[in-house]
Image (tube, helix red, strand yellow):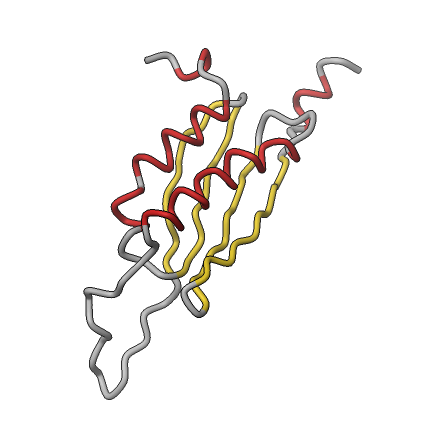
Length: 122
C-alpha cells in the first residue's frame, strides 16, 4: 500500500482502526500522529501515568472507551483535519478522557517547517 496516494483523512481512519483495541482499554491519554509530506509515519497513544497506592498499581482491567465513544472520537479526529491548513509536516495530538461516562476530547495541531526548504527558493 502506497500511503502517499491515500488521503490524510483515510490514513487517520486507518490509525484509529489500528489502535481501537487499545482505546477500548484506556480511559484517558493522548493519541499522537506524526505527519511528513502529508503521510502518517509514527502514531500511538500516550497513556496518562499509572499511579500506585502503597506500591500497588491499579487493576489492569480498567474500562476504556465504549464502542459509541470510540466511533465518536474517530469521527472527530477525521473532522479535525479541516483545521489543518497549508502544511505538510507536523503532529496532531488528540487528548481524551472519560468524565462521568462522557468522552471529553481536545485537538492540538502542530505544523513543522524546515529552513533548508526555504534556502533553495531564495
